[in-house]
Image (cartoon, rainbow, N blue to C red; front, side, top):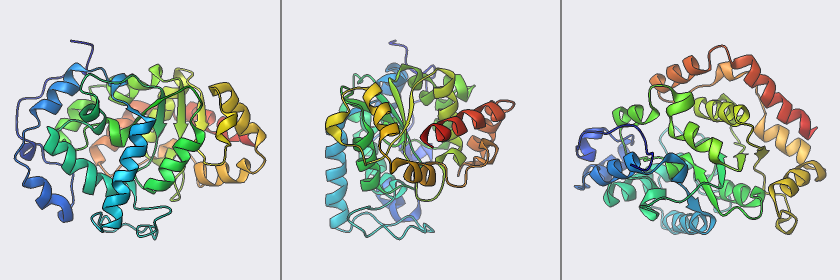
Amino acid sequence: SRGGCAFLMSRRNCEELEPLVDAHVSETVANAPESCERGIELHSRIPPQDWSVTLTELDDFVERVREEHRDGRIPQVPGETSDHHDNFTEGPSMASVNLAVIIPETRRAGGMSWALMLHPEGRAIGAFVSHSFTECIYEFHRKVRGAMPGGLGSIWTCVLSNPQAWGREALSVLMGPTPLTDSPCARAIPKAQVFLAVPSRDGTIFHRSWCALEAYVAFEHEVQVLPALDIFPRSKRTSIGSATAEVHRVQNITPLAVNQLFAGFESVRLAQSSDSEVEARIKEALRGKEDWLDGQIRGVMMELL
């Protein structure tokens, strides 16, 4: 073992892992006969901090999404309120991309994450990217690219690093007994050189359970936290330090960062998840730590003012 996740799932087909898909893609996924055995083996063996993709691979992924989007093969998630789905500047939500592109393709490849599909032996983390699944895919790409410090060539981000095709039972096991220390993100973040928080148009990401937990781990391990915005001149970002300096230098960052990253933020106590079990487990993990985490998040906001 190379220090991978401390679990071994029984060898079952993906169909038995209850993939988290909606009706409009469930038939495509259900018809994939391949087993998740390969993905289970990889995620058991490769340590979470090595579930990363390169920036070039992120670019390639987004181009792949553009092709699918132009051809009308990415339906909007039922009930989603975004009016940018058909917009080729902002694009469909990450949730829609996940259901239409990532889940079906990674299931066909063996049930691993997109990152381990590309790097079966793993790729070391550079930046950890915290995001909500409500942001638009092209917006996400611009912001990550726009905020990425020079010299860092890879990212770890939930949608590409975690095995999205796994079902609730398998993903629950993947979280480990203690999400703050055992979950893949909790094990990856301390190895990151920088933590990028991607704003969402739908309000602060810190009211999303996983984003709140990720932020706690980053602050606890003193990983540099930066807002991911697409307004920085790339030539000036030669290091994490220069990226941090650029955050403070650009005058129009204040309203943009505060409005997008912190809009509506009250407390991580309000953080929610679409999975009630995950939400309950994270709330329990953060119990007694909420005031400290709220203060750290507000501290980042105050540094931008």
